[in-house]
Length: 276
Length: 276
Image (cartoon, rainbow over all chains, first blue to last red; front, side):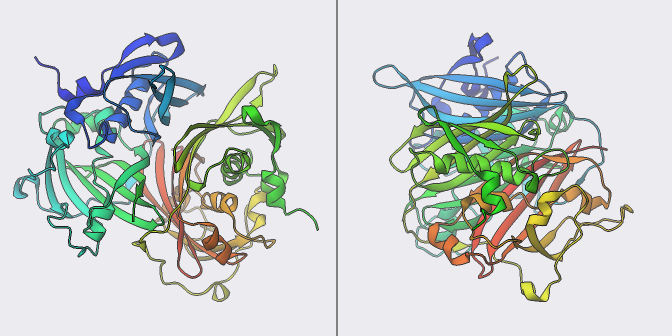
């Protein structure tokens, strides 16, 4: 069996595991315009924690700061469990690549919280929007040229598709879309982290204007255990993203990912740089 | 003039500034039940960046992970600008206190992004709720015993006040409240960071049940420059917080802070541990 392109993109080798060091390489299959798709970078960060022999529990929170675009090629990941409590664990992670002189340069900083989950009371105060089923929604097939990662996903937009013409006519910033891997792959924490960064910059929709924009920092909270992920399997997730405040070069967008059955699996927020 | 208690709580001395090391001390005036109020810890993190001589620009994003409660007394803050670009700067921050044997133990990990802001197009897609003016809302004066920090704030709850009886009758998790320092102090980035963590755990409201709960990680995005903060001065902010997903020991809550004039100054999200 051929390895799934996502598994290939996030594969890490333990270069010095006592020191928390891993090596990986960017994947052409998840390339974005000027570097790897940020979702895969977030997934690589999380995977380093999941691969670490000292891991306690399951992912709860992930923050990834995109300090600079990764260049095509190998990278190093350093994942350190800086504090381990009885039921929670706090991680700091950095990704580096060598500069022209060979000195390591940080391009990504991150923190992760993992925890042992216990069964408790629970409820969802952010119910899934009422939308047509995936089979009733047409598949989106016209990603822009040079954006390989979009081809790795089956996207069925319910509303808020990328504007077809940049005519400045936008008046809202919400998108709702059914999502899953184009090549079937069972949902896990790494792919959930990746999917959290799936939503194109809200400013493009809000203004119907194609300004330069890029995520600066993303935070994702995981609301699922292994059983909840397994019950999704290779099924669809419903994603929703909306812009909040756009001010002097930065805006934030909020996102949610539900299972097709309506379980809220992840909530995510990001702040995005933009020009003009 | 006596120093404001908040300035006292976040005051840092440069112990070794070339190495990014600062020292501070917890404040009894902002004590919470088992440690300092998390809002002041977030403010201390941000203040170390603001005090650093290599700082570029203004705060854009702040993530603080509460790895362990600080104990009363002195602490060390280590703030490192790990990557400085033309217009953005990426920081990692840790707070440590010595353990019984004197070895430094990390109790807080954090990342900050700062940036030079440029004037751009902007809009607010998350308008301030329509509520009575602060003067028309009664002041909340009955914080629980042992929670000193609440006395430092003037809070005028519009809706979603802490339940007076824990009778399990809750059915929603939204609070809206007018806020400002009890002793007048002009708004700055540190106090805005602190105010972002002002909202009590949503689970107490949602269930009208007083279960053990504590913030594990908070992320705040700043949507203001110096001029926007100055125009608030010592005025009120309107805060809103709401729970999202409650699942097996953790829930997340989303918060916004508007100026009285309706400018969205900060958006914040946190994930909170709870029992039962």
